[in-house]
Amino acid sequence: MSKKLRIASAISVAATLFSTLFASAGSGAKAQDLQLQVAEAPGASAITRNSAIAAPVPTIEAAPQPEVHNAVETDAVAPVAQSATSLADLVADTAVPAALSREMECLAGAIYFEAKSETLAGQLAVGRVIVARANSGRFPTSYCGVVLQPSQFSFVRGRAIPAVNRDSHAWQQAVKIAMIADKGSWKSPAEGAMFFHAASVSPSWGKTRVARIDNHIFYR
Image (cartoon, rainbow, N blue to C red; front, side, top):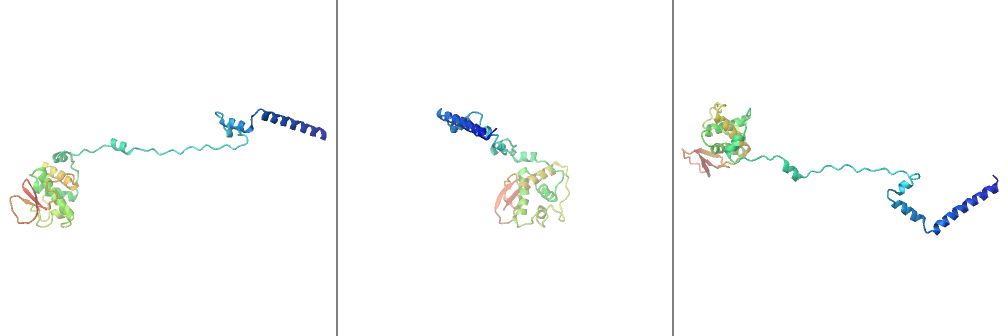
């Protein structure tokens, strides 16, 4: 093709394009309007329409959110321990462990020898006196130290607790009362007392009387 022919062909193509654009402008349709219509068309976007010239935009997935539990609802379905309605019920619900620590042996021994023939309240009061002494700072800080302290409990022999029939009901009950007294899971009628004596004697202690339970009088 000659140079003149190529120039003529280029002029013809340019004229055709100019006519097309002029006709589009004459019809009132603008390029901007066309782009807006494409962008707003259902299921279409500017990115998909120009995918050949635009880099694809990566899809960003939302990070999984941690599961949230309602504390009130969780508490509502959690098992709730029922409180005993009486000391007798609490004793009945308390299991005797297969083995006792030396401290619990001393506490149960004092309850057994001092109050095994008395009511559960009387036994608990004796046990709580020993617990109160151990926590007071005025007596030895262990149950065995309190029980075996010289001149405190008449049943002690040679700084030792006498042998006990561990299969007896009285011992099993004393162990349960000792566990309750140790944990403070039931309030004694003589709570806070740190001294007691048999009702058959009248020592001149000058202490504050708290209560009389069965055959013992308790003081703080």
